[in-house]
Image 1 (tube, helix red, strand yellow):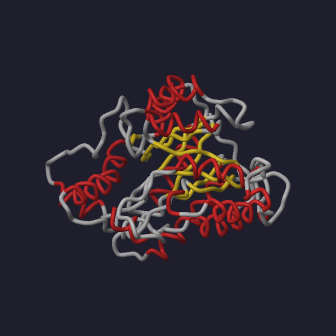
Image 2: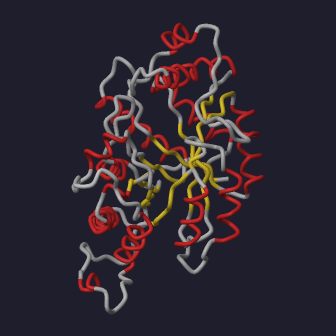
Image 3: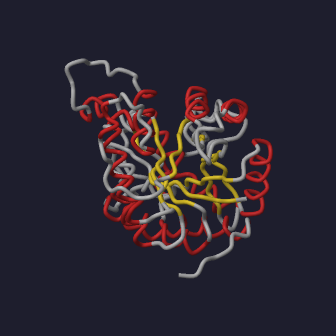
Length: 340
């Protein structure tokens, strides 16, 4: 089974966002050597928790620092942007790093309602129209130069003009996104770590209804979920306490601050044990444990959902612990290391 990474560039307490971005670059280099399939960078706005608000910039740096791994967005939140601009940015990345760039597209805002409003160019109406299907269709037409003969945009010559293009994926965590990915005939990445409620139903629907004429990649699926792996169960649970305390603080109105250390997290949590928000699916949003157990659980999930690639997001306080988690998973799944 293939393993991939989605990186939110978490900011640990006591460190700067610049430190978090350097950690992301270091982790990408490691993932390339370990044999991971792809490295996607998330988009989050106006938050002290995660450093990457412009994945396309970090994609360019990560791709330059690696040699084999596919690099992409997990994802670009299309409602904020012009489809033409997104197409140009990712064709530029494709020109620089051909056959290595993924364009993951999402519909979620990536921030609060106020952040979303501030990102808008046109603020005349408080309610933004939900025209994502039209945006997605326009983006696909720009990337494939497939506007109808009578469409005015057919005359636009996309630059840089290069053979091929980025792989386009649709990201989501709902039945709506499954239906949209199936309709457009693009591969589908389900964000189980955001909301696991519809994981099985969404992937089943997609597999049953995907338009396989959409692209050569149509029908491909990736499941993105959280995982924290350590040499022992006790150490893995200790690392996990940082995420639990961060989520508790968020639910209690404490803001989207940096990720606390395990010491601070355990002091905050005390003897309570709260599940993460929206942890209502068949499987938890975050799997926590030692390598053998995580290998067994991830393999079972992949077999039940008929997928051959799992994308891991790991948020812990210590960067070295995050590196070690991905190393242990690579060893457990027998990924083939790459040379420079």
